[in-house]
Length: 257
Length: 111
Image (cartoon, rainbow over all chains, first blue to last red; front, side, top):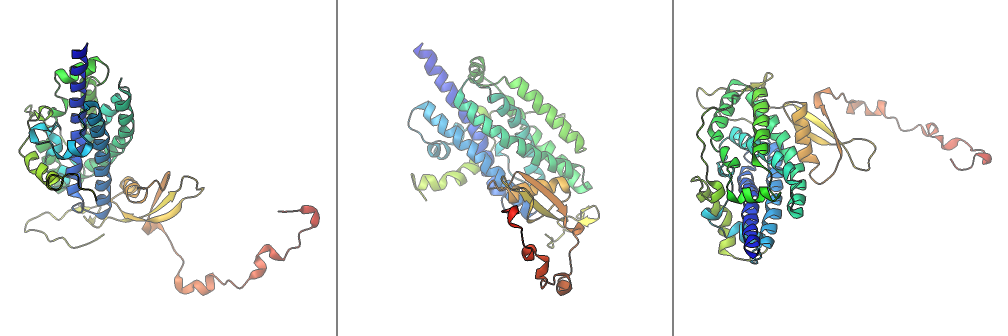
């Protein structure tokens, strides 16, 4: 019995960190995009997106810390873990690039998070269910914003169409990592804490297919997928993102302002 | 918003509905507050079309729970009175148009 409880706690902490890190790393990317958007309206929009994801990350990290019971705070978990201890999907750490890459990365993230959070509201874990209920509302708005821009730019000018298709093609091979699963998630799915990932993936595929079709963009057919983020194997970009995000906290641990 | 963006030689200069990109049309934003009965002018946003204008208005003007409903109207569709004709339009020296001169019969009580 004690062994089962220990295993479940470790699995839940790992799963919560995966959910949290997706938001933490995406928030860091979006924060760096503020002031680089094509107009001031979307500078505000991307700041809102960033803060929504950061808020979700904080809720999940705080909960992960309390489940773990080792006294780690949200700040410790965000700022003192290295690259191999971060469990975000590799999609989230991909560089901002141009506006096309920002909105396409966001579309893929939103098309994943909407069905994920909606399923998680039925989680057997009440705390996770409550966090997901708030996050689902935010994710539905994010999807409206990202899909609106993907449609307008995909079905826009020759130049915007070209850039959007390049972003879709460039980012597609990082979407498979969202749906990789292992014993951790199988255990939690069995206990009703995590949703079955197949249903989430089916809704992701349907959303992406619908939005890209309306945007006159094609869904890539290249089967290659770069996976590994959920177990801490990342693309080279996370190694540059983390020191920028963490250096202040590491230089001045516990600093407040 | 319009500012000059230098173009590299051979770069396509994008247009949207005949306008240069970056020169999106202006939209006036009206927000209805949670306990308000009418939409009140909040400001303006630039956006390529109505749906995007609603999204931009949501992000710019309802960040702190200011509203529960948004209207956007193309600024070009708003026709305004001429400030130079304000004297002719808004002659305020007609106090008799206010109902304060009527005697209300006592039987009516408070109105």
